[in-house]
Image 1: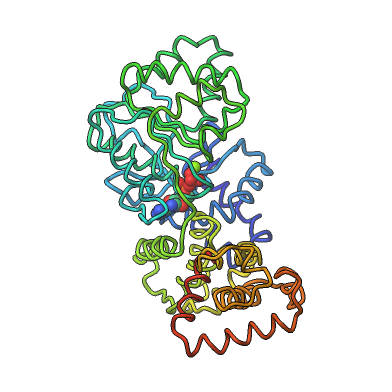
Image 2 (image 1 turned 120 degrees about the horizontal axis):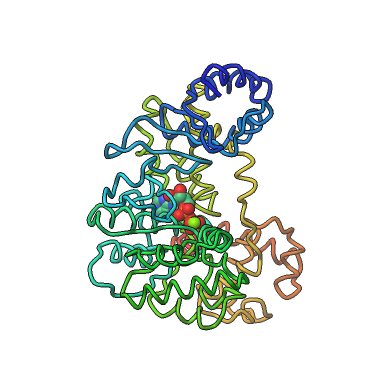
Length: 455
Ligand code: ADP
Ligand code: MG
């Protein structure tokens, strides 16, 4: 394929993406090469690469294939450089086109995956939920004598495990370019392993993996149930630990909770430091959003964001950081296309689907638990028949919050409070509604409870 043929092929996309999108996102793509099934395009900015990849990647790929091009994947390269290195994006992930340039000592073919140029310590926002994981990663990133081996990071999707691992790798590559740092996913490890088996290159495979100084394997839960891979992983692991080489692992859950991994491997994985990344809280999410705005401010210089928009997003999108970032990117793109200030209203319009999907359903039971914890009373007393103030007031607060934060009707709420009548619930809700304007302690309690319930 040449840039010319691309010029013809891309026109097929007008019908699929619409004229506006075509002009804004497809036309500016400059085809650079097609090699080994990877079609590369040059884009003016990293943001644009991510955006096009996320939103139109599949369509572009399909269209190329439909026109008989032998393409399996597309990648976007940004000419602008970070530390003199171009970075490349595939499916929304940015990575240095030549990760190896960071470590000129790496002339031989290390088995790692490319690192994402954006995933550094300086772009990682630290908050309560991730401070331990961050501190541990920082420590390992400093290099020096191995203190805990392996470092095992775990936590839910999109909480920053991969980001931290890449950050460690960048740090080590910068401070000690001679180190052989290898980062790859467990899936890639398995792929490599199976390939080596098939091509009868096991000796080479073993030597290669045993020769690295720092090995990072991401998403190790993937090897659960894959016995031969597990076995090989275990041997690699042991060989490296014996040589006092640092190993860093991640998974979506704690080692003991990964089913289908042999006990001896689990116990090996636990033998260093195990730290978890907790779900984000509001402050962390807001911090991440603010940092992203800062990061993109250069590019969207004319874009204005109304006050309260970031707070709104941090409040409403609590599922995971990836979704949060995606939402912000979309807002930016939308705002810059329509050339309007990003108001709360525009946000709600533009992100209606994301907001709906991430609506967290708070339950009456959850509210009851939180409220009884907060007032230090037993759940049975909160729900039970006793009418003393110490129980009655928290009960009314729980009723009030149930009305405010769930879609339950008054009779339904009454039923969950020991079968009380809906008029009792109504009375309670009204009472708190009045009190919250007069009694600052109650207002404060409500705010605290609401915040902690909304996560
Ligand atoms: P995981 O590997 O845990 O699923 P990632 O490391 O891929 O999650 O993170 C998902 C996205 O969220 C990435 O773009 C990452 O940069 C971002 N992210 C997660 N946590 C943070 C944080 N604390 N600060 C900045 N960005 C973050
Ligand atoms: Mg990950």
